[in-house]
Amino acid sequence: MNILSINDLSKDDMLNIFEIADSIRDNKEQTSLKTNSILALFFEKPSTRTRTSFEAGISQLNGKSIYIDANTSQKSRGESFADISKMLSSYCDFIAARLYRHDDIIEMAENSSVPVINALTDLEHPTQALVDMYTINSHIKNFKDVKIAFLGDIATNTANSLMLAATKLGAKISLVGPKDYMPNSTYFNKAREHGFIYVYDDAKEGLADANIIYTDTFVSMGQEAEADKRRELFKDYQVNSKLLEYASPNALVMHCLPAHRGEEITAEVIDGPRSIVWEQAKNKLLLAKAILLFVSMQNE
Ligand code: CP
Ligand code: NVA
Image (spheres, protein in one colour):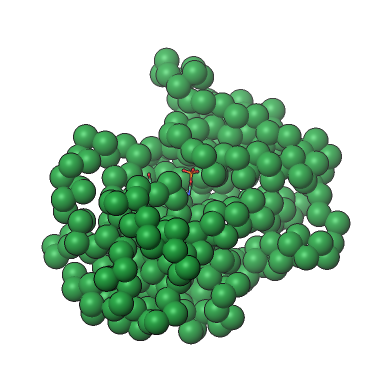
């Protein structure tokens, strides 16, 4: 199986991944992949956490990783994603790819003989959404009691994956962003089939009763040319102390990172008592291992 999108996972699949993560955390079971399993990481975009957590994760499962920077591979000279994927899958047991175009990861998956994991594309960040929902679940036992308010760029990859994962698991989600700035309609409509999702431009309304406040950068990778315009567009949706007053008194703050203090979030909030951002980031290692084990079990 591949994990290109949250659409590739059922609710039970996600809960199964969380159970695997719990067993790793609690050292309940011997957790190991086939010895010398190799994970190829083919990245067109930078990464701090996703790359490191998957590399550390596969090492801890007795496997190895090979990082391929697309810019120093033959991709930079026009080799196709299909050809790259055929080759990588003949050397390795898994491929994790971080690409610009989502269609390119689909092309990789179609040409791979091993599982392909989306480590972020312009459209989705499914492994992040799994980390996020797992982290939320460690604080709020029942997903039906969770109400997430996603602020700022509500059409970004992390929002797309999170809205699908949250609604599928039974959590509520509000997307809070500028008037006339719409979420991706395909993702929004799919999430609406699963459960509660609404869009607000009024932060006070959008944050009402929210117990999870989530934000991401206003300028995603690849959008650098529009940076000033986007900072201006989203500035009223900065997660700051004043805005937190609109949410539940115990609301927790999350951010997939990297953070830009003073833009989408203030230093006071991200480094303050309501923030669970570092726990969220730490869980990326646990979930990287759980995802690799889950995918390998599906392909046995
Ligand atoms: N959250 C996340 O994907 O971080 P990186 O870009 O550092 O991998
Ligand atoms: N939306 C961000 C997520 C970074 C992890 C980006 O694509 O740059």
